[in-house]
Length: 256
Image (tube, rainbow, N blue to C red; front, side, top):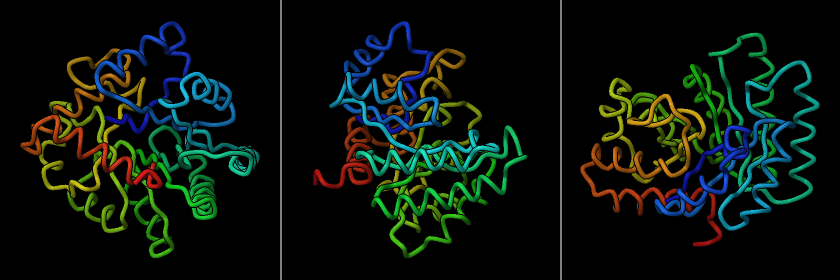
């Protein structure tokens, strides 16, 4: 399995990071993809890659909740890093109207800037879209036919929204919300394009049931796989195989 979205470089894991990675490996999670947040998270993220080069893979991007007055300087740093070395994807980028609506226009500007970087460097984008899924679908539509590819991380949308996303050729990241009793994903996941779903934890956030309220970690990718398997009426092994192949197609296309 691949946990396609985990922030295990954060301080939440400072006491037991090695054990967290060991538990993930024991549960069959062979790769953990690390989305960046902003300039403050780069050093710890790259240190983790250095320690676990064949397990932890960093991305480079600016999270929408970090789009503030200085966002242009932050984006300049993202661009500098992309020119300096290889990253797996542009992310975590996107839009967010849940926490703060002050910088909405700047969020859209940052989104387009990072899409352009993705096209230039031929990388996928990893999209955060909290309470902005329709607006973000419209932003991606601006790039239709230009070769932009990526994933809508933490997909909790409708069947119709899922179809629009896959019509662009984009993927959907399924995480802890898929296991929530009142999350509604039991009515959506069976109708999604199976070739466009990947697994993620968003550790340390969005912990799946039955561990809600505790810290999330990549080992719990296995729990999410089990729940998705029940919705699709497949074995967990089949879902492991399916979602790993999908994640490889998006993030590791050269390995085909």
